[in-house]
Image (cartoon, rainbow, N blue to C red; front, top):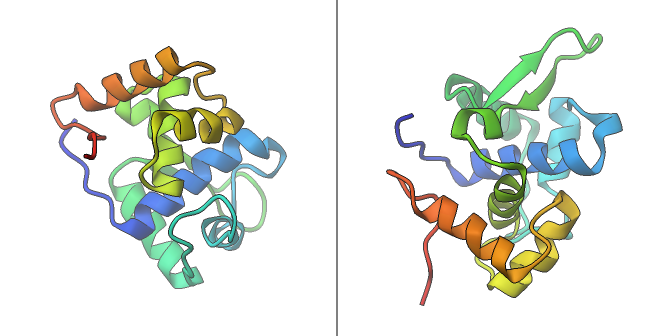
Length: 148
């Protein structure tokens, strides 16, 4: 797969979809409005964003073009969205949890990542976090990098 460059809005919308698919599966797939509220949450987010419905829709349209999300028209009157993140990027669930946590909360230490990714079924120990980070860094187009 070619390198993907996500805007901050696209990264937040995609990571919010991943997060909610795990933490609130009863509300997944998600409408644009529900996804906008998830992306704009005040807790567990850095930076806090204030995306409009149009911003969220534009991010979803670009993510759909990149094949990272798909529209689910069979979910009722209102179109709903689901991610294809792990399928497109060949991510294991624990690695996906680490990457989504970074996308939602910004740079973190391995200990912070372990604590913050736990709610997304992330690795339970330091070795698991390091293995996930190594997987994300050791790609043709690295998805994470170590900050000084």
